[in-house]
Image (cartoon, rainbow over the protein chains, first blue to last red):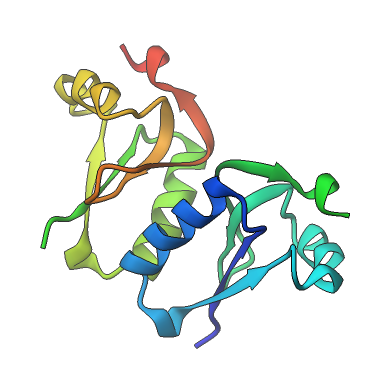
Length: 76
Length: 76
């Protein structure tokens, strides 16, 4: 089964949301990408519709923006 | 284990997010509350920190606002 991808950038809002998400979603269902480290993936995330982090991109392509930590533009 | 509570109000953004959330979070870990129907719970949700729906209130009390469907004020 395709995994969801949780994008974040290490900001406090992101880290808090990451812990919450990983507590409730089975670990084999979600991959975590740190855009502050994997900067090559920023453009890919944006192409998928991620406008801010933290965000969860579902296997069906839907993007769930969770609270607001940072705009994707600020990660470029 | 205490469940997370997913609050929504039946709006298109809510329903889409609900399907995504319920697809990825095990059903025994999350309770769904429709604030458009359970209007008595609007104040309770707001007291928990819900500012807009859809929102997921985690067992630890953290509130994850997911995208934006409607402001809690508009549900009163």
